[in-house]
Image 1: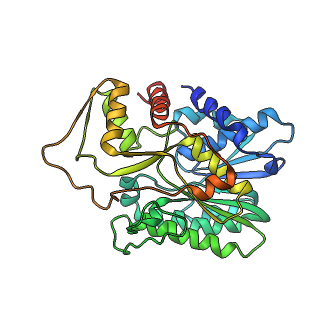
Image 2 (image 1 turned 90 degrees about the vertical axis):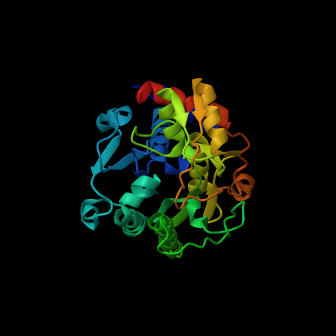
Image 3 (image 1 turned 135 degrees about the horizontal axis):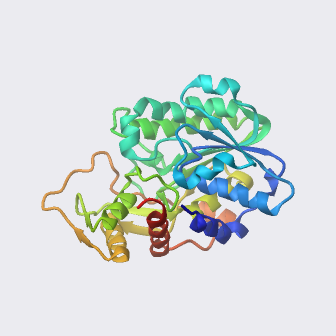
Length: 338
């Protein structure tokens, strides 16, 4: 098992953000075994490898770490807190931190629809209790989602776009959970604590579990088995963002952001069918379409966020292309999960 690609990705964005405000501070990452959490951890470890003023890294872990992160359990610069963020009793023994990155939660539609109550708690109760465990002048980043715009007819979504979904919507536990989490963050913005929100749109890349069934990884898994079978014509449009670009933007939002809320997305506007074709081409396998389409219940037809606020403020100009990002993801997937 190796994380060479992840380390290379962190090196490629290292000049785009500055972690010095966290030097000598304690940083807690929830969702530490997830895609974004993994790249956040490796960013902090790179800082500690190059600086004498170490960052104290702490992680919240609920399940066993996947094989590619198992070495972190014995890492001398990492403290692990094991427990369930959706259970308030976990917080009784949790210390105070100078910085908290709340990236925990179910990102897969299948998972959050199977765990609706827990999904709501992770974004609401956990957000409130984590903010209560932040030092008085600490920094907090809530990793939200572009799904808060669900129901809006206008695209691209700006940070002021208003979503409109009903509480009985199939994905309401996720959408409304994130909205409520954001509302809790806004309530704390009137304190001395620095609270930021990053609405992430379709981050992808190395660092996922084999159980991740989101469409991009599902295509890779199918492709490695010989062919990609589509469930519909793939007309829905998405803008994918390679995880190193996502994390670069999130660090800047947390440490430099002048606004409270930012969209975090990429530049690769594509249909699901085009995504499948790119993966099929990379793996040299065919893509098959069904004679009768299966309806994708609750999924938006288009996800497209406006990135002007983040780009104008942080000056990010380079983004990993979808072709290169898929190639790196597939390479890592082969090495670690196939």
